[in-house]
Amino acid sequence: MAALQAQRLFLAPSTSSPSTSAARPRPQPRSRRSRAATCRAALHVPTGIHATQENLSLQVNWIETPRVPASPSADVSLEKLRAIADAAADRAEMHDIIGRQRDNWNHLLLHSTNSLTLAASAMAALAPAAPSMVAIKASAGVLLATAAVTMAAVNKIQPSQLAEEQRNATRLWRELEREVRATIAHGAPTTKADVQEAMDRVLALDAAYPLPLLPGMLEKFPKAVEPTRWWPSRRPAQPNKSRSFGRRGAAAVASGNGWSQDLEDEMRGLLRVIKAKDENEFLTVGNLVLNLNRGLAVAGPALAGTAALASVFIGTGEAGTWATGAAVIGGALAASVNTVEHDGQMGMLFELLRNCAGFYRKIQEDIEANLNEPDVERREGGELFATKVALKLGRSLSDLKQFRKMASPSVRDEDIKEFAGKLF
Image 1: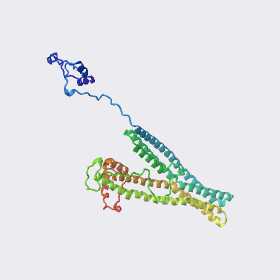
Image 2: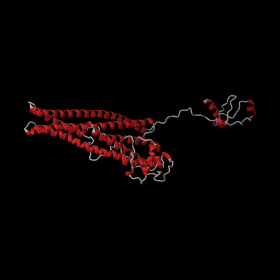
Image 3: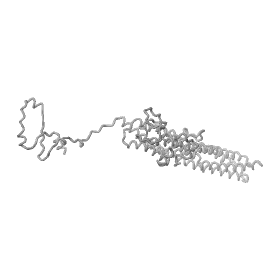
Image 4: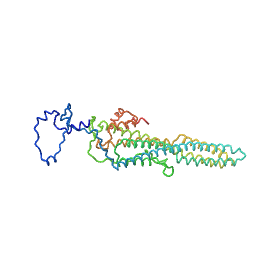
């Protein structure tokens, strides 16, 4: 087929009939120099095949085009992304292992501390009637003092909160690994900006959920409750010619990149509801849990220490009776407080609330980053972005329309009753 097309390309206007060729005038002879300068080739088509001007074309689709090698900078960026994905997978495994270890700490330290406290209380109650009262009350005092020190140390590090930090870190590292590997598999050219963005996310995650216990552990009793931040700070949008809808009209006007006036109003309404209701609710409840946990963390060691001090005066006349009661009651109360704090996992609950507030803070910043971009063509696709937001909030796309009216300045924050999120 290719040979036939080549014949058609170089075909001379002649026929296969000898009568026709005889009727043509014989060309004038040329000089040797002219014949050397001009070379013509005539390919004759077999009889029965008719060539037309439209068919005189050479099809080169079958010829393989040479591949253009990728630039060295793109190859280096791709290898860097692979290294970041491998590091993210390694971090996820480390956080998973450490999270299980610290969860074991919570259970083991809870049961051992309560066993020490209750055993010491029982010994303090039996000491006055025992023949070897001095040995028993000394043992009770040592056990209660040990329990007080152990409670103070455990309350400082909050093992249940440490385990929750590692669980959330494991999930986020795996999410980062999936996104980086998806970028690599997509096959699009990678740039230094892609590598820098991935590196910023790695550093932000390392800062939000540190691996070492000491030093570098997150403050377990902060003065103010703030949402957890595990994503890098966003760079301000570059000034450009605005194609945003602003606050014009209420009708939905179709635009490029999937954005419209109605969609912008929905996002503004969501942004306002999340700030006023969802994030504020988690921060308020988190502050209550923090104050309760702070009180329990102080009360447990204080009660155990008081019981240890009272055990010294057991068997000293009338004061010894009160000392026995104080040691027994103080030990029992210390065990109860320790159980409520750590078996109830107050630290884990506080960390969970702080992470939920961070989840809604990130949605806010995602919405603000798109709305603050004046050129709609440089934003994320409108329909895709709305779908992502709806999935994160546990809602359908049609549910987002009800937040359109919340963008109006006439609606006060006190009038907003419904929360934006339905997942938690």
